[in-house]
Image (cartoon, rainbow, N blue to C red; front, top):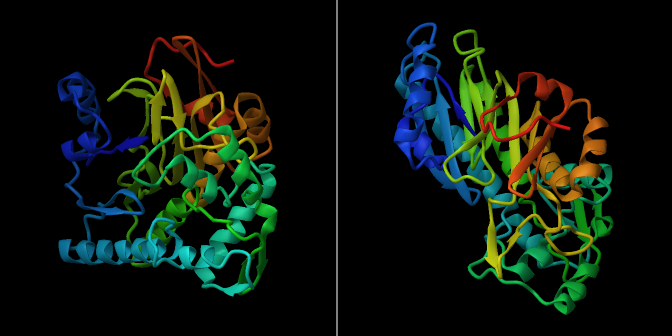
Length: 360
């Protein structure tokens, strides 16, 4: 999912997968012609962090360019700190060091890592294990997060499933114990959201009020009166490259999307993606995209993953029990897409793909 605001640039349209600019030119002309007044171009910087492209944009016309550049630098420093704590791919991260001590004694950890694990286990419990931070061995087996994606044998999957059990993550502040040797935590379904929140908190503490943070499509947004009602969040079409499924306006908070198009490979005509079911070890959900809107990115990120793994029926029941979150579920039936949204999101959702039938 991507955003468009009065300051949206060509570079960010390209980054969000829009390869046919001519196809989107009429849309852009309508968007820009509807502005109430022209706004200055923001200061924006992009870096590769947390395994994705992260872009921070600051508007705030009353602040100098130097102030904005310094604020963005400090926000990126907060994200870099999160990467040093929670990256499974970095051997030197705090998470990797903890993983290497699985099956041993409890390990003292930083307040940041303890917080993320506590939130992870909260979502794991609430989702009945659909979100599980101990899926590391499964992701490694499939090759997600590495250089070689592969379809494991059923025997290999069965052999690692006993290592996937969030109940075996024992928290006793300030220590964590992974009770089973060979367990591997993976925080890819929540840490990116935590990083967005930390960066947003940094910028707000510095007095900035018009902020947009985009980390691989997961968003943190804060608006002032100058931009309120003018930020349009676009949801990527899960089956059409460079196209949109829907959009809605969002003034503040966070938006996260999990989809089967993010990390996947195709073998013998079947798509295998990284959103693995912790119970079966396979990517067996009947959903293809889930978007969650929430006050904070951390839980939006985790809830999107949980709902995706649950599948269509279970996710709708789960969403109805989460009053602080808005959900959009999308599945495929033949060549058509079917969607369902919670009431608040449905009221502001604009479906762009006219081939999509009404929700049911």
